[in-house]
Length: 100
Image (cartoon, rainbow, N blue to C red):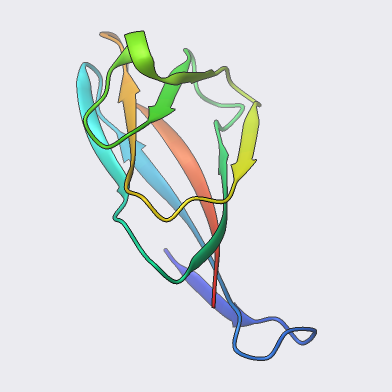
């Protein structure tokens, strides 16, 4: 499910949130490149049972930023963002995006 709302403090700024399922042993495109993106927050849900790795679209555990269950990272980037889960159970990533 995706939620979009307008920020009352900044006209023309959209805030979108979603939970993205991540299959084990595969790279997943989390966000496509977007020139209008201002900020991204990615969170590994506390219900995850193993780390997820965040990085460029084509990536794996060796070159991603490790997020353990409950961890989050926030940054400004317009490039595509990918995620990786090592073999084991599927996991998830929660995504919060601010666009102009």
